[in-house]
Length: 256
Image (cartoon, rainbow, N blue to C red):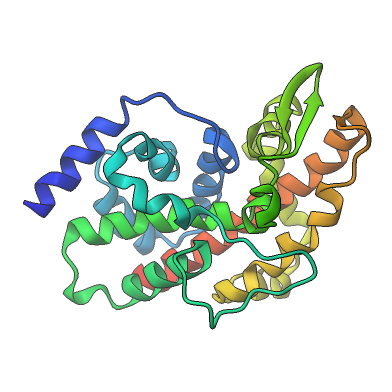
């Protein structure tokens, strides 16, 4: 029955309309595409076997698409973690957040011998999505403004909120592409990439947390073109790094 329910869930939810969540549909797809470009052939074949006919786009966006089904409401708090300004993440606080859930699925995938195929597939989908979420600064932001959702701004003459600007609107208006994100590799040498690939989710949130000062650096509730152009480069780098780390997760779980 569990296998049937999960298969039915996959079949039904891709017919649902897509809302704007972390990195948007386009950003999540790019993270998975970058990761797959960095997988060794054995890992790629193993992961694709579990994904079946799912595309990389679908794999990256599955967790957002299932939000339309109330049965999955328990997963909504997995997409983010709130850490007050000036504070650091406290791993001793046991709560269901993006750090703990991503850590959980990494551990499960690395010890997957007793897991069913449908549970392995689900963990792959969760890893694909939450690795991307973790690298969107407002998904590791402040609870007092709900990760920027309560910060109302005007961008390109339209009313929106800060979270949505970072999720998808800069990606769309600045035409952030897969090739542009892949070009970020030239800024990292082999040692840098090895360090980025070291799996430690608690450490991973430090980098996007350091970007929050710049995220909130605008005036008069207006996001201007200079802000968008400056942060385009940061978003490209964050998406690239998320792809590198997702590749590390999948290689560690499935290589050989």
